[in-house]
Image 1 (cartoon, rainbow, N blue to C red):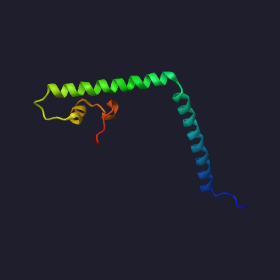
Image 2 (image 1 turned 60 degrees about the vertical axis):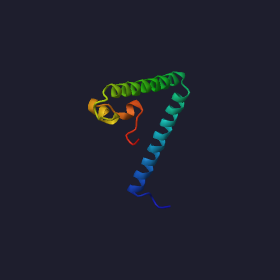
Image 3 (image 1 turned 120 degrees about the vertical axis):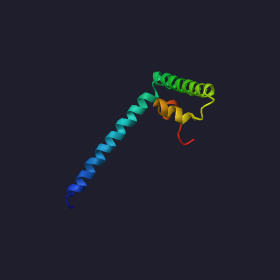
Image 4 (image 1 turned 135 degrees about the vertical axis):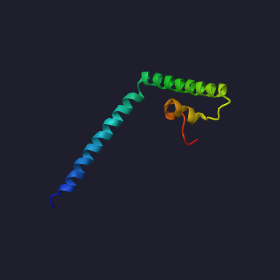
Length: 90
């Protein structure tokens, strides 16, 4: 068998490190998925997002004279739409 070239060695070592990284991520995911505190945090996050969206809707309702939409208001205040569960595509 022929020895591996330097590029093949880099590819093999990258492959090993990416597998180790994937394994580490899967272990973390498994640990957090079964953690009851993570469930509470997820529920709290969803509750916070709904409250933020409601506040945005209320702000727009009181500012009926303006022609700004949700995304424009978020941009004005420097708020990432994803942070409150909104998508720029919809």
